[in-house]
Image 1 (cartoon, rainbow, N blue to C red):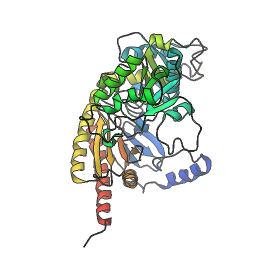
Image 2 (image 1 turned 60 degrees about the vertical axis):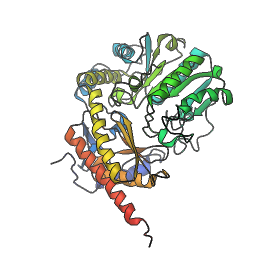
Image 3 (image 1 turned 45 degrees about the vertical axis):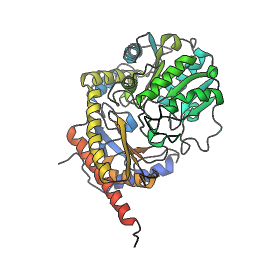
Image 4 (image 1 turned 120 degrees about the vertical axis):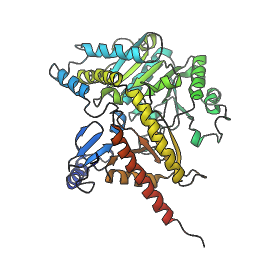
Amino acid sequence: MGAIQLRTAVPGPKSLELMRRRAAAVARGVSHATPVFAARAEGAIVEDVDGNRFIDFAGGIGCSNVGHRADRVVAAIRAQVDRFLHTCFPVAPYGDYVTLAEKLNSLAPGDFAKKTILVNSGAEAIENAVKIARCYTRRPAILCFEDAFHGRTMLTMSMTSKTHPYKAGFEPFAADIYRVPYAYCYRCSYSLTYPSCAMFCAHHLEDTFKRVVAAEAVAAVVVEPVLGEGGFVAPPPEFFSVLQEICQKHGILFIADEVQTGFGRTGRLFACEKYGIVPDILVSAKSLGGGMPLAAVTGRAEIMDAPGPGGLGGTFGGNPVSCAAALAVIETMEKENLSARAELLGEKFAARAREWARRWPLIGEVRGLGAMQALELVRSRETREPAKAETEQIMRYCYEHGLLAISAGTYGNVIRVLVPLMIPDGQFEEGLDVLQAAIASVSEARTHAEPRHV
């Protein structure tokens, strides 16, 4: 018997009743990718309230790299709960905050002294990284990228690229935020082709300093090493080397947003390591907490010390239970070599996905880094028209057949893989079988629906 077990239609009657209650009680702005209500989860399996078992390819949107309820994480949480839940680190500090900061300082790229602050979420961490950069440089402007996603707070929403549903209706936005094209080679903003483009998009930053915002006004460039919500776009490595060189030339800080790419997802603890990037500030979150809310800002000590005492902090930042969980996450990553596991999972996915691409023109591109893999779906490979409706159909087929998966991309046409890295091979292949069947079903339906010319 496989890992997937469906006892009812999906969604089942209990999930449907909870959906009815949800519609009446929860603001409609809180979306859901599936109509499945979880009852329990373990490893890479989620069981819903109707007793249906699903393979999880979403991982809480990248928060479960070590798996649901990882043994070390659960044990660390229980031990900390028996001691205390909250004192507020700025009031009565505790050792695990310091230990975790020391650990992150040692793990982040760069052979120099570093310091760390802990907060609650990726968006909060990005906000603090920007605060620190502005305080250190005494400059106001921030450069970010098209197709980027950095959060939903006012500042991070201003930095996020995608308009619907993240920005439309929430104007006005924060000032001194400027956006430039990312190295999205499949949809190049300049209609060029890599590598003959000679990384025009990265070098174009110098032109931005002449036409849009002066270099001496820019505090930092904030960039995801691999786009997350923007579609799992992994740029050519030269992109970052050019960007970092330009930043250093103009005294601009380089901030790496590793909220989704961090903690083994791309085959290294941080994606920066894969690209040879040494950021001035690195932001981590999501899988750092192993399911608990936690984020970190780690950077050069002299930069991190720019704000004075009281300039950084928060009531729940670095919650002791979350700190204990994070230390267990790092131990699990190291002892189980999950970064190497990410490489293997990525290779397995890419091999099957390339075969799918040969069979079905719906797949425009297979891409990714490590286990951060994606399919971009198009209605035509010639025009590259995004296949948003088809992507939604595939996502529905997946959850109806026992696979939890999520989409991404500015055009809503990317299927992304965020499977827990400890997933057994058999479960991974079973999940890929469902995804393959979903792509086949939608592709064949499209073929039959196309008009026949006589």
